[in-house]
Image (tube, rainbow, N blue to C red):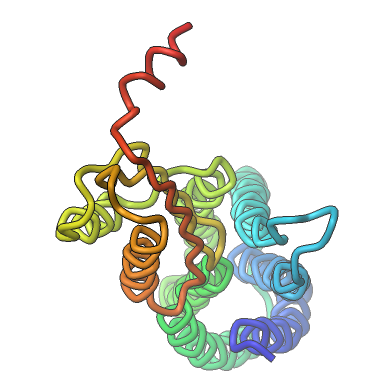
Length: 297
């Protein structure tokens, strides 16, 4: 089983435990801040289940219907996760504003503190684990999941601060104000997740540093006279590179193929554990201007 899939199973199990703990306290205490954290954990559970499904299906080999595989499921999962975070933040914001208009005192304060302390510790260990997996695999789904639980960790800490402040000052207004702050932070966290996922679904080009690295590999090869139509995109852990390389017309197809293989290996080495798909079109002359004129027609 891939490390990414193991990570989603761990996060799903942890989210299930946190949902039971937080929702129980939220119902009895009436705290908006705890409710916000409980809803966030419930969404974590649903999203982690979906992420496992996404990673499981993205691993399937290409077939007659999906000839390039199903790797686009992963950025799709990231977009859905970001949208879930966004809408849950709006729900929390609504409830916080409602409590400002209709104040209600928090009950079961001591029990609430104990549960939130336990939740904070569990979530902290999970975030460390997901960060480790994210750095090791560079997987967008796991990165999104880690960010989601980091939001949960932030909300847990904020809720603990709220409970302590209310116990010390007796001011109940702190609870909905913190709920508003948590919701705004969740919205701020969701935007980059959605953006990255959408860009990947739309086949956006690789980052400039990666494109420059590919150009350098092409330019240092003495057999290649020039190149054009360099196109790149990324889909989950897959990288796609297409380029037209211009060789001397007198070179044999065999020798040109050897050079192309060498360039492909260098590009694959640069991207490390990612699955690189390189398409080298071998041109006997530079036809870029001719093809550009045809495109204008």
